[in-house]
Length: 345
Ligand SMILES: Cc1cc2nc3c(=O)[nH]c(=O)nc-3n(C[C@H](O)[C@H](O)[C@H](O)COP(=O)(O)OP(=O)(O)OC[C@H]3O[C@@H](n4cnc5c(N)ncnc54)[C@H](O)[C@@H]3O)c2cc1C
Image (tube, rainbow, N blue to C red; front, side):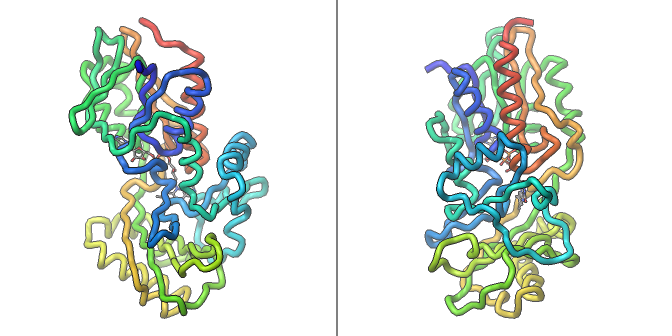
């Protein structure tokens, strides 16, 4: 089947964009580098038990987003989580606790949201796009996967995180001025890394009093009692996420060393038992969140004289940021692509 739009990246932004385009009758294919969809809206299985090691819970206030999340999660809403929070530190997105904002932590994991967005879409996982070229005199764009396979369409959406988007745009050949202008625009946006540790404990480990703690100082930004989101019988699991500054300083050091240091810091909050897990999985998010440059704040489209066009979306392209911002950015880009049909300039 000939596709009209190729979406690169199956995080919340790419899937929201693809879903809206498909609903508007466009033939869309999505390519995702990872084995599954969701990107930073991530849930890992530890011996079958879901653990959220990226965004710890979903939140948002805009009615269309609230409706989309609740429709996607169905009976597994986990509404109002976290219920017990403590600490004088700053949550990743303080807006999550403002009046009018809803919060959700499904038992199946936050990844249930992007999975539901992907249902029925043509999504190819395990496909890393490594280059992009204009063909047919700039009428179409061809994307090249790492294994050498190619696909072409009139419109390509890059819903990859910023570093990958910048890398892919640098491969585009030929590159008209409108497309070349995108690189300095993206350079306005800064992201921060986040080192995260999943730690599982023996059955007799104590239950922490709080669902989430934001310590005021030290290396830990967010300490999550992940088990509190799961059903009866779930093993005790914590997720420890480091501050941006601490993550930057340690991201190139061995994961064993920074995992131990983060568990030591978490033990100062929950108790000495935190330093004795029976299973540890470190994960380094190199571009966890957008910290500067949300002035882009709207999806971007650039065209070739022959009518081919590239659209950019993701959490950097909506002032709300985070999962809600990613969803809005994907939808806004789809609306723009549908409203302005491509054609020769
Ligand atoms: C530790 C952590 C804590 C967070 N806390 C919060 C929070 O409290 N609240 C909140 O709202 N948000 C939070 N976030 C941020 C939130 O998860 C992101 O803003 C949101 O998920 C971004 O979605 P996205 O679709 O823009 O990007 P991503 O989820 O990054 O999706 C991009 C996708 O593109 C794929 N990709 C990249 N390159 C290629 C390629 N070359 N070819 C094919 N595919 C490619 C990636 O594998 C990925 O699946 C947190 C994130 C992290 C990591």
